[in-house]
Picture (cartoon, rainbow, N blue to C red):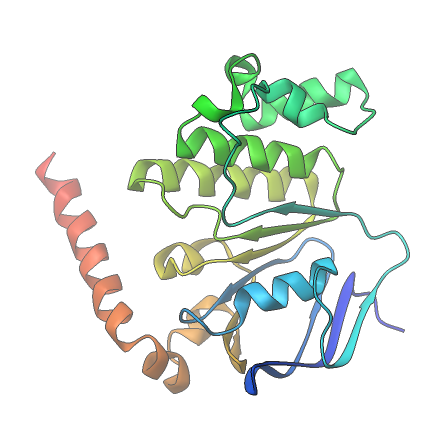
Length: 239
């Protein structure tokens, strides 16, 4: 008997004769913060779609615990410019929600001042917070975030990751986050899964950094990663 919220067993998926996912297995437990990393085209988004039931794997099994509640924030979302919907209407669409719980969620994600704005007028960072709020209104015990900080500037990324960390600690939900921001991954995660069609390596962030397969896959980014650290370090001293 597994206490995992989600279990993936030997998931395979191919597309146009190419292996997208090859024998992928892992478990996600209550309270874990798992980051899924991998180069572009490694199968990360396909894996998320299988978890969400959007596409079906060719073989293998996905098992959920009986009381699973998923919250999902997509990688890309564009508000229809021709539909004048406010942020609050978007958040409450097709949902019957307790107003105290709603207010608590808006306080947590800091979007109170955005509620009456048209959804289409939001900046990238504001939209990400709104999408995160919508995911949380589902009262998830598993929060799935697909590249949540994409298209944000460095400050926006830092704020969003801090918010995700706060949510994780406060709600004790499991978080599965797809990311390519290696330096962020090293901070938040309890577990890192490195995917390149199959799981190349997995473990604690600090052990992943020493893994040869990881270093081969991310050779160019490791260099960049260290440069980022040095830059911030110098930057910090200049002020």
